[in-house]
Amino acid sequence: MFLLGISVGSFLNVVADRVPAGKSILSPPSHCFNCGHVLTARDLIPIVSYLVLRGKCRYCGHAIPARFMLVELATGLLFILVLIVFGLSWQALMVAIMGSFLIMLFITDLEQDVLPQIIVYSGVAVALAFAALRPLTGTTPGIISSLAGLGLGFGVFILIWAVPKIFKKNIMGFGDVGTAGLIGASVGYPVILVAVYIAILAGGLAAAMLVVFKIKKLGQPMQFGVFLALGGVISLFCGHDIADALWQLHML
Ligand SMILES: [Zn+2]
Image 1 (cartoon, rainbow, N blue to C red):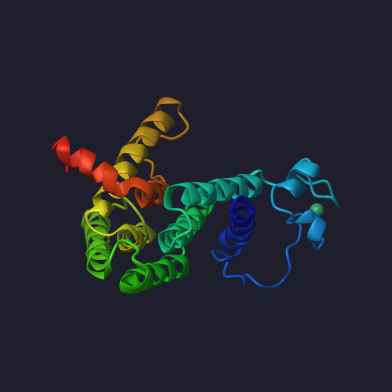
Image 2 (image 1 turned 180 degrees about the vertical axis):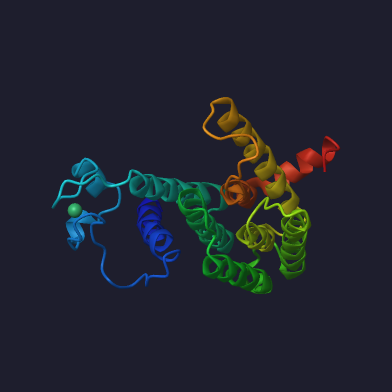
């Protein structure tokens, strides 16, 4: 599962780089960003190549962003966690795939401040397909819960997106609206509330720290999609448990 995960992570890196730029994910073959040299199999072994080459291009010596290795590692760990929590099951497959969508959105939002529609809406379609197949596979959420989550995530965030526009302010991009819908479709209702809860807590905390350490100024926009993705992944694993806990604490 770890080897599968780091290979998938390698693919997610490619998608996250190419899709926002409108490039094909199939051609041209992987090449160095700096010198353009086409990379061969020994340059493309997930994690290993990065470590062997000490983070530098084999051909021109230009630094390779550490993100490539970190994403491979994170996806490998995600897949191990999926196996531990869900065993070899349809639910494991569903969480691994939806988690992969959220990793791609995490990267594109963090690095390029975009949440590409093609990734968001492909994710929604896949999540709804899993929900619709529940009678065969037994995965959660089912289709009613999934549609309710989609509607709630999309509906609430379209208000947060649209209302400030009346006052000529931009709080977030429309990509965040779609991403909230995607997470809603993946985790269903009521777990979507947990995902948003985590996103707002983590986003608020991060915003406060960025201001305290003077990395950003107060009121400067930040990439909320990053925190939505984080809340989404956590909710895919233990959203129901967190929902129960919040319910008992009268916080949901
Ligand atoms: Zn190079």
